[in-house]
Length: 266
Image 1 (spheres, rainbow, N blue to C red):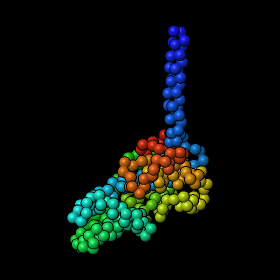
Image 2 (image 1 turned 30 degrees about the vertical axis):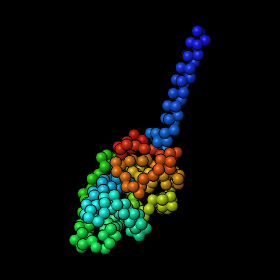
Image 3 (image 1 turned 90 degrees about the vertical axis):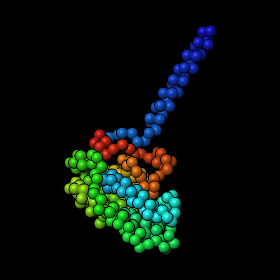
Image 4 (image 1 turned 60 degrees about the vertical axis):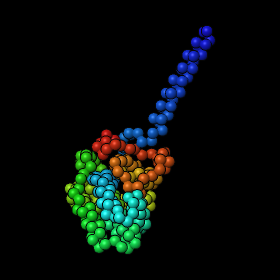
């Protein structure tokens, strides 16, 4: 009886240790824990769209209008898929931004209608695009507070994709220009693009921190070139910016739930 009792105690102890060990491993493997930013950072780069202000929401609204406009030609899903296909195909020609999106909507409409789409529909698509260009700027909650704090110690820049004129217009309307040393409107955000940016800034990769909402564009390329990154997810992400779990499972970056949490890292 004593042996059986001791065996049960040992089993319980082993089980408890295994549970604690699993919890510890899970916590240790979380590569995105809240750690203080290293002291060698000199420049902090901010993405613009969906990091400083709302953007993707307006694209989703425009897509919804576009789908309704072409409902007589195809199903909702087919229109969505075709528009996305055309957008991606056109990125090398038009780049990122609203103007390229407008042209892609027109091309998609012509394709799905076999060239029969009425002129009035084309005019409506143009109106949808112009409405997007003239949307008011809705700052992400806490952005200005964070910029005011960081400006005291660091050089702040904007590093964003999109159309140059459109991004300059949005920055002007946002009243945030006063916080930034300069603006980098990039044709893309791959490793080579960030290496070029780092050379332009005349700093070491370890002296750059990027803050943005896209793992694909604002985080993973930075880690690869030896810089630091903070991921601030936005509630809506363009499918082109999504990445698989495997591609970032071991990446060394930090994730926060909202931009205000940046203040706790310095």
